[in-house]
Image (cartoon, rainbow, N blue to C red; front, side):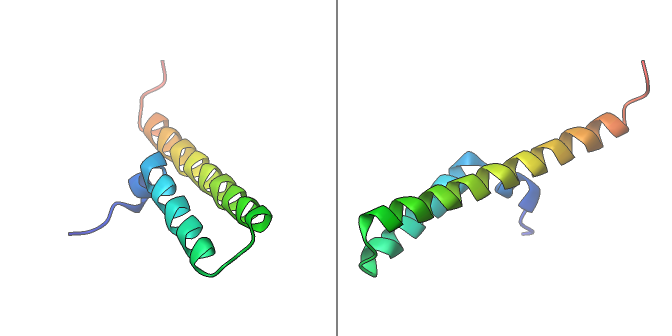
Length: 69
């Protein structure tokens, strides 16, 4: 089974799971709360950016294959 990375990277559920793992690791390693928040915010923003880029790429590819109106 091949993983569809385009769909995976544009999934909000995937990024929520990533954030949950990162948060758990930060707590496990005793990272202070203000730093935890900053790291989680950074991961969330990177996830949103990647999801946007992948989503726009999919839309552009779909529109490229449509005949002009």
